[in-house]
Length: 408
Image (cartoon, rainbow, N blue to C red):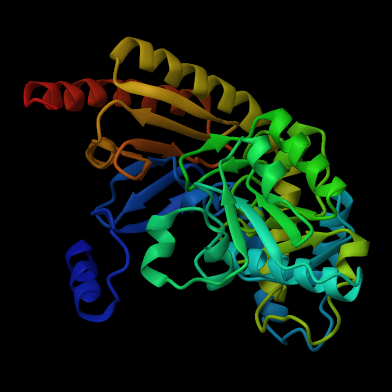
């Protein structure tokens, strides 16, 4: 039986809970920076699974690693040792500030683990009853109750109140507000180096360095949420490298396994002492297949110099978007770093622009009504960027002109 977009929509209506606002396309195949739908139409992907497919779609080395592992061992739980998990933990320790890793299945789970470890470390290792977590307004740390409570977006937390107590939110890039919020009850400060879901707002260098100093001076832990910024996305393997600081904990997910579900909490040896057997766990976390994929991703990033490409092409992409802002008058601001970029529109027409791009064979993402977000595979080329920017310029002129002719 033929499976097409109409079939998928009918199944969603009948059998799926309606919590996604899907775009009208059914993707059936991907390779590199390209996707194909059920009609055979080709698209250039500037979303990459919300930043997960850092090495592109269906990379041969990742496919081979997954195939080898699934033919040997898929799952045994963390009651036992497996080679890929140990090797991945060692590689992440080698490439980062961290000494220890805990593996789970998503970014929200990684942030849950970080919050729990911060509270347990304070109580069990430091002997202090600290519980408060300070995070930033506009932040996004996940959708489970602990990480949702850390999220500084009332629109996301409001429908589920009361959320977990003990969380305080302060303005992003405001050191004075952070200084005032961190006190003797604070166990952790959790920040994104770039607020992704909040609109791609980049932390100022003095701000993140100041956050490190404040948390250390006041006895709190600094947790960096690198769920979206990690794995080369910003032009460094981890975004904290741009700032010349080292956190106490860092969370990863999205790009770590190249599109397979994985999350990781990385920590120093001292902080890791807060968890003992039975304190926290995950049935599927760090299973052999996803760890084998993550090992392949790290190898591909290094061998194909994709982190350097993210820095080079990302800088070019940002400059081209800034030129587009001047030429069209349709963009209010261009933000971001590496291949994590956003263009804020002068008019609330982001969804329409996304649909027009899709019709033109380009997959982009909108955050709310007025922000376009770009998270392409790290293998994207300047030629592909040129193609998108050229088409986007024409679309912006058409859409914004349409708004102005109808009175905004």
